[in-house]
Amino acid sequence: MIRVFAPGVIKLFGEHAVVYGQPAIATAVDRGAWVLCERGERTVIRAGPAQAQIEYDLDGDVAWARGHEPFLSYVKTALRKAGESFGPLKASFEVKNDFPPSVGAATSASVSVAILKAYSACLGVDVSGEELARLAHKVELEVQGAASPMDTAVSALGGVLRIETSPFRYRRLATPIRELVLAVLPRRGTTKEIVAEVRGLKSRHKSIDAVIEAIGKIADEAEECLSRGDLVCLGELMEVNNWLLGALSVVGHEVVLLLHNLRPYIYGGKISGAGRGGVVVLLPKDAERLAEALKSMGIQHYHVRIDEGGARLV
Ligand code: PMV
Image 1 (tube, rainbow, N blue to C red):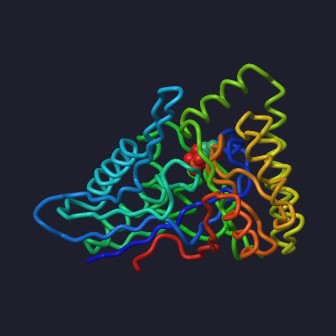
Image 2 (cartoon, rainbow, N blue to C red):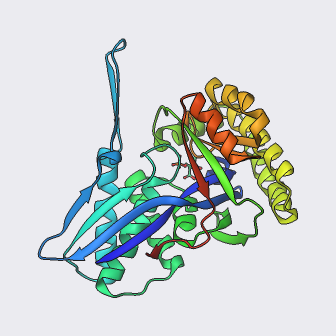
């Protein structure tokens, strides 16, 4: 039996702008996707109930179901790509994720990376982190139509990475950050829809280009704060990045209010990922007290550590 872990990914700086060629900084965390692979007669996929999320608004008579169908598309596409690259395999795959789907913690990327890694390991093929990143990005592109290589690269390679997309390059960054707290708010819309809306806004207003450039400059400056080990500087830039994401219409008032209320416990915070709710990444002054505060507010949260290892057998 093969057991693989692929870390989830939290975007520290630069989401959305990275789609337009600006640099971004993202980190792997010690929660993510787990895949068990066992060779057998048939290929079967089993996944826990957390892979789908259903919300029903009784007043509006509207239902949202997220996770289920896209989740299977990622798994099926990853298995096909693995077959093309590593050869045929019949096996059962059991998939679990520590995070709920579609919240901005790269659940699809980490599942794709973990499936590819498990498949190759089940066949006895050794695959490099860079090759995993490349293949998993192809899975994301095929399922989503458009996706930056950020999530798949960080899940495959681990650590804190500076990502540039055109052409794709990455650099491993030293970090003073050991832990983060992630608050999870209800999210409206998928990454694909939100990215498309930002594209629409950008096409209607030339001034949006300046916002996107400013987000790229923040990622550059944040790199200097990281190398100096300056958490105050990082927290402040996270807040500025968040306001700029607000200018792209992806940060709601609930995020602004949350950051305001948590101010005593954090150096700073921002949305992570496409936005409109989902993960709000918080740089804690005291993670225990911050978690207590979130608990008392009834907000779902995770205390995570930076994962330096990337996708691996466990
Ligand atoms: O919400 P997520 O985890 O799917 O992250 C999306 C990040 C974007 O920069 C908005 C899009 C991308 O492909 O990089």
